[in-house]
Each structure stands twice: as C-alpha cells, then as structure tokens.
Image 1 (cartoon, rainbow, N blue to C red):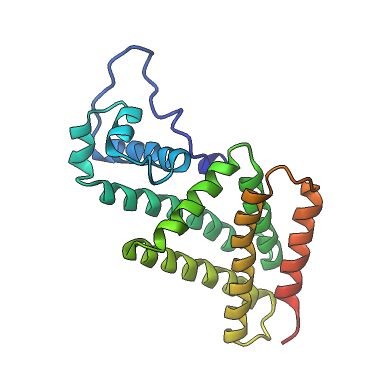
Image 2: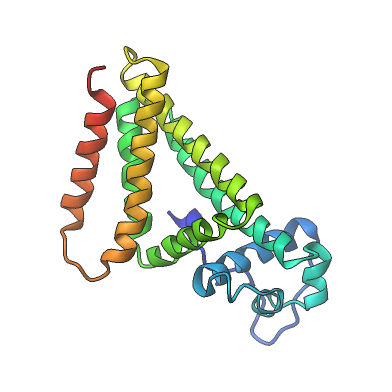
Length: 219
C-alpha cells in the first residue's frame, strides 16, 4: 500500500539546509497536495490553513496562493485528490481480469483492512471522518462525497453482477450499497474501538464471509 501513504516525508529530496529548487505546476501542485493531505489528516479542518501548508511544504505563502487562491479551493482539491486516489486503487483491483470476481472482492476487503489497521491507519480514518463531517455543511463537499459513494457502490454492484449473474440489476445495486455501508462502518468501528482487543485475522476473515454471503446469496 505504499502508493496510499499520506506522508510528505519524501517530498523534499534536497540536502538539509540546501535551497529548494523552484518547481513548475506539474511538480509543485502534487507536492502541495501531499502536504495538504497530511495536514488535514493530522490537524483536521481547524488546523487546515494555507500558511501552515506553505510552511510544511517549504514554500512561501504567496507561492501557494498562486496555485490555490483560497483555502476553500485548496481544501476541495485536497479532498478530491485523496478520494480519487483510493477509488482508482480499488477500481484497478475490481477490473483485474487476472483474478476471478470473487477473488477481486476479497482483495478489496484485504486492502481496506490493511490500510485501516496499518501504523498510519488512524490518519486515514481521521481524514475520512473529518471529510464526512464537513460534507454535512458544505454543499460542494456533499456533492463530491455523494458522487464518490455512488461510484464505489457501482463498482461493488458490478462485481456482484459478475459473481451472481442471475441477480437483477436493482438487486446488485442494493447489495453493492450494503457492502459499501459495511466498509464505511469499518472505518468508524476501527477508529472508535481503539484499544478494544480482537484478533485482526479473525475479524478480516469474518468480513470476507459476510461479503461472500451477500454476493452469492440467491435472489
């Protein structure tokens, strides 16, 4: 899951104390977004300021504002980049024709569980929960989250249709929604369970059993 790490530790490869090289839009914007993701995950909306992000990115505030004129513009770009990163990753898994659809569904469980239980998993869940909270009050983010939910639901529904071709499209959509709600619940549960003890392997296996049953059950 290296591609999904939300750390900016590797953004600056210059020697310590050496002046940073000037970048162009194709290199500077992704670097700013990576830092912004880290700040949003660790500090939340309250700590998400252009000044803080510029400082962590090692650039001047006016340089950041050249690319993102307002805090809101940068926030939306940050959340959109984060959402797209994860969706594209799971989409790649779902479309992997080298695996049967049942295996693809299980890999999605494995990947989601691995991300959320990794060392920096709490930052991932913190980012998601903070985004959901903001989306309750921000129309633009609400629309973005609605589209993300619909896209992921369709992805899961398509896999179910491949696993269980006898199901009507409406039934596949319903079951895709059930799987997605289970996955979203996992984000909340793992964030809130904290030190509650459970065997991770058993938990992961149990989740696969539930997903397998939902995908294969008769109409």
